[in-house]
Image (cartoon, helix red, strand yellow):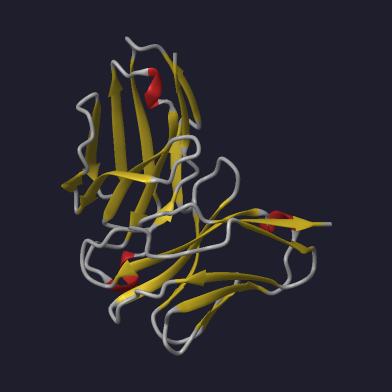
Length: 116
Length: 111
């Protein structure tokens, strides 16, 4: 596998379910990101991790819980979601967060989430 | 607080060069110009970035005007697979800077 992978690619869940999205990067990067892209809206940054430490949380509701066990893996745990949380969830990685060209982000294919 | 302005859409013929314009008249000296594209329902794909000089890679060329207030992304030989939304983004060179996606320009490559 190369680049940034995400599983599952599609997920349908009820409002009472608990599910997790997984992201894995094979680029040797140290920073990882979760974005949300709702229909007809620009990408919204949700969380940022740098060297396994969370450095940004952009006022994301607590029903979204990120986890970064190591620099290669990032999870987004979902529970009691609402239908308006249906969106494309994108993971990205960059070498670091220190600015300059090493901060270039590379994205995964996304997980299309539908909440019923 | 959009930092870039792009046309809503454009099209070009397959095999011809696609020139995608972007205005960033308020860009500061410590901001990069980045280009990404997003094919329908897929993750954004990094294309190229530049600071002051023109840049070229295997995907595209980036031409930045001398005053840095505008730039053009050039796909030299567009194919049908280049049909996508292209985002021009201005990003600070400093640490922890954000990558802010706007609406982008929809490029349609016709046969």
